Amino acid sequence: HRHAGMAVAGLAADGRQIVARGKSEARSYESVYGEAVPVKELSERVASYVHLCTLYWWLRPFGCGVILGGYDRDGPQLYLIEPSGISYRYFGAAIGKGKQAAKTEIEKLKLSEMTCREGVIEVAKIIYKLHDEAKDKAFELEMSWICEESKREHQKVPEDLLEEAKTAAKVALEEMDAD
Amino acid sequence: MDLNLDAPHSMGTTIIGVTYNGGVVLGADSRTSTGMYVANRASDKITQLTDNVYVCRSGSAADSQVVSDYVRYFLHQHTIQLGQPATVKVSANLIRMLAYNNKNMLQTGLIVGGWDKYEGGKIYGIPLGGTVVEQPFAIGGSGSSYLYGFFDQAWKENMTKEEAEQLVVKAVSLAIARDGASGGVVRTVIINEEGVTRNFYPGDQLQLWHEELEPQNSLLDILNAAGPEPMAM
Image 1 (cartoon, helix red, strand yellow):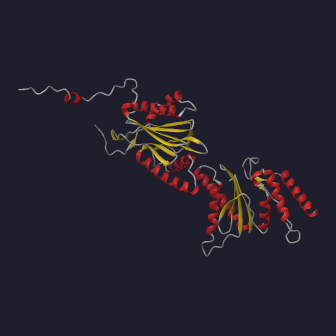
Image 2 (tube, rainbow over the protein chains, first blue to last red; image 1 turned 135 degrees about the horizontal axis):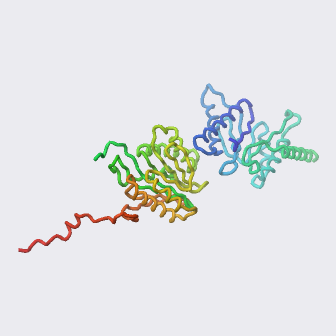
């Protein structure tokens, strides 16, 4: 549903499956209960599906982790779902190859004092900072957000803000290198 | 006289749900009839679904009981999964699913009322076909026919709890006066942030309306009371 979105790290094909399941759970919840699925409930349902694939010998676990973000009646929430099937709520989370370094950077941020706009820029800075020119392949940054400004709907970050974020990130990199 | 004691129990009924500033008041009569015979003159037509959501039942007694039982069961599971009380809207939707999907077999009109922390006091009417209508007040049952005009005139927004309950009791008692299938006592349930309060108004304490007679003492009282003293011989 439009009030929640997912970011996937790992095997893309497995990721598509998880996203499809998330969409289907959200749709079915709404058709039974008549209201938009609470983010907590959605994350629990997706996590239990991921967990399912760890129970039987003839199924392999999902090869990817998912970050689920949503905005419901209790406000904005972020959940992380790992291939083992556990799901926790976070205020800042990272998955993928650079997750340890990313987590360190996130911990430096004062999340409770940031707006979503500021968050977009900070996230871009972290991604650029972590990218190792030598070791990693070139990348394209894609971002999405859910906030008051996006009318509580999951949408791609608008072009201008994205450009602003990328520029700020590159500037921050140069400042760091200059040291 | 055809009593037809094999007729399915039906609650002719008058049921009402009213929102006020801070919660809802649900009210109902207490007559359950089997044809012409009153099977239960003190039934409780306001049934609990969760701590904060109640439903008024009308129509077939059996159908409405079964539907409430199923929904209570689903809501209980839902509450466990969600980790917090279910909302009134969700309760109404679950009832609607059962009512709509089984519309050919069921004959029950329901009024769902309750309080939750997101929307406050809410009333949802679910008549025969299985539509859901969110309303500031709802009336249902055979006795409700006599109340449409009354509510158009008497209902106003943002009443206090006392005003709302008085309105409900007055309305049910008016309907009881005119509808043969409604009678007995008036039960009300008030649901708000603080909790739930049940009230009971016996039939003989209700206000008398136009052309209604005072309750008469039974002739037996007169016969048994001042009889002549046995003559002393």
